[in-house]
Length: 394
Image 1 (tube, helix red, strand yellow):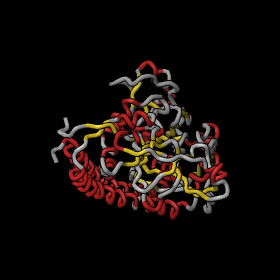
Image 2 (cartoon, rainbow, N blue to C red; image 1 turned 45 degrees about the horizontal axis):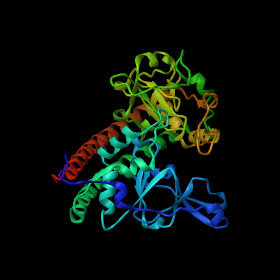
Image 3 (spheres, rainbow, N blue to C red; image 1 turned 90 degrees about the vertical axis):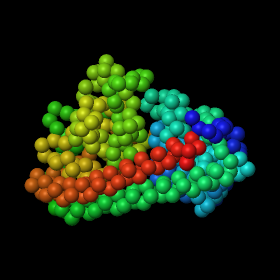
Image 4 (spheres, helix red, strand yellow; image 1 turned 180 degrees about the vertical axis):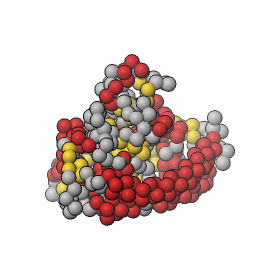
């Protein structure tokens, strides 16, 4: 238990202004931050849309300022949060965010931001979220959540320590991010750009490139309440940074899972998001052999004509991601239908050539694994510091 008194977040923030750019700035360009603008890994705004006020979506309503904190109210397990940088002062944010504008007399902005990123806050939001396939919390829930609150001086000191530890992790992630383009460069060097197919490889629909006896399919329609110790299932939001975040998986009963045996995954299957973040992929690790999926994800089992790492990197190739993007329907609720995904053309180079690529890609993957191991140590250190800081033991 923290030695600091606890206060509601809502008592520490200031109300922000709302507006309607369609009516108030129809002929002017606005800067719009939506849910997809926030990187849940780096906890930063990585994209800002420029659009005419007349074209602003109905969710573009919140005027934000530098040092405001954006908290995504959907999929709280992903912790899609970010602090508004100075260059986005005056931008418009989606109502999908709960916007926290710190009262500087009560709370130091970076301290509040560190708390919003803490496991304790995330657990609180996940516990209070409603909706199985699209979990969400309300602004009210965020405002009523409590935060340990020392003096402003101690808040500054805690934030400085945690910021420094956090920065080490971000630098390590940046190093890992530099390795992915290397694999894609090798892919194009060996096989050519799949969007052009300069080497004239034969092609088949994805439905014919998967393992015999399987189909590209999604999973459980209604998973029910969380079942501790039950069958884990993979949702769209569980695919982060090209990997499945096993720690955040929810579980369903054996009875429900048994009705969806076609979507049961095995180790080395590929899982693809077909809703929201359409096209993101990850490989099923050994520890999730036998897990299941939800309707937002699809199972792709590499067949006899494709090596796993070849098919994975083929699906991640910019040209193929572009093809997937062109098939997506919906603006607010983005998705690709299974029928269209099954038609995705897959090039089939000779297996020997695929294996040559796999050998080279595996060497890079080993390097990535070493970097990830170092990152996990940094994250463990950061988590320990967070825990101690908010208990008043730092």
